[in-house]
Structure formats: structure tokens, C-alpha cells
Image (cartoon, rainbow, N blue to C red; front, side, top):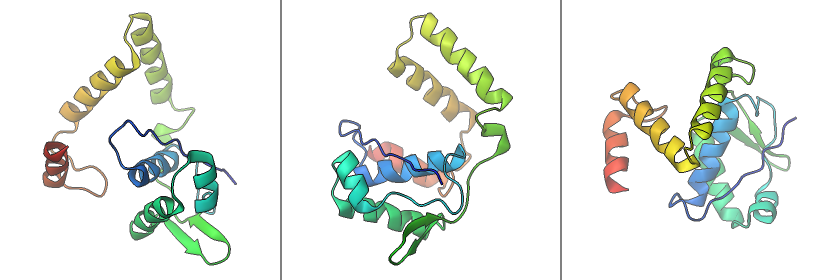
Length: 147
């Protein structure tokens, strides 16, 4: 059983509960969390991340609505399904290429924010018009313009 530890960035402008949702989905996509794994309790998240337990419960309810987790009374919240794809695994050729690219970017003097901006720009260009999982292009556009 894997245990994920949430890292909340209070300066990001993204609500803490949404960061928990995003980090859980990322862990599901990377295969860090698998069906049957238990998520940390709201109390455990509060202790490790200094967030209100209700914040975690809100995130877990959203994940439950999306069919990714299920609460088991008295036992905790458990992963129902994975989002992992073999092409995105830790040992995939694509990840190896990405790590090499990141090394070149760092050696070229790019800072973390530069790399994030570059990746976000190319990602948006490459996947323009393709809805993110669980979203529509219109919804994504609305989120982007309201930010």
C-alpha cells in the first residue's frame, strides 16, 4: 500500500482542496497510487500539511464524485481506479526523454518557472481544443479567463 503526502502551496492561488485533488490525480496517473490503496485520513493530512480537515474531506468528496475513490466507514478512503498508463510510467522511454530534456533545460540556465512556462505553453498549443479529463474546452477557457 502506497501513502501519498500532500504538499500545499499557499502562494499558488489554487485552493488547498483543489491541490489535494490535483496531487491525487497525478499520483494516480503516475502509478504511485493504485486501486485498494488508502488515502491519508483528514486528520493525518491536517497534521502533515496544516490544512483544515474539512478541506481534505471536500477534496475526497470531489474525487468520490469522479469515481476515483470510495469512503469505507471506519476504515478510510480508498482508491477505486487508476489513471496510470504504461506510456507515463517511471520506467517509460518518454519519461527518460523528458528527464534528459529537463537536464538540458537546467544546464541552459532555465529556472523552474521558465521550464514550467515553456511546458505549459507547448502543452496548450499541442492539446488546444482537446478537453482535459473531466472538462470541456469551454470550461477550460472559462477557468483560464477567470483566473
